[in-house]
Amino acid sequence: MPAKKYITWAAAAFVAFYVVSQPDRATRSLNDAADGLASVAGSLVTFVNTLA
Image 1 (cartoon, one colour):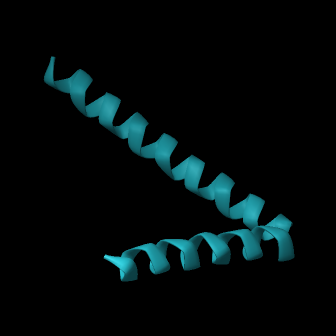
Image 2 (cartoon, one colour):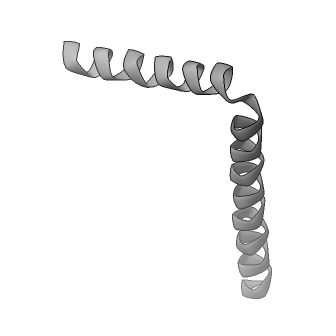
């Protein structure tokens, strides 16, 4: 199990480095991910509403 812990820490370090070194791109990526999740949620709501 130590490999999983090392991979988790490495991923967290990479994300932290990315946010610190390129905050504008990190913000844009986060906004794109949020927009994608909102789109998926909207599609799911539409699908469920058509079933009822």
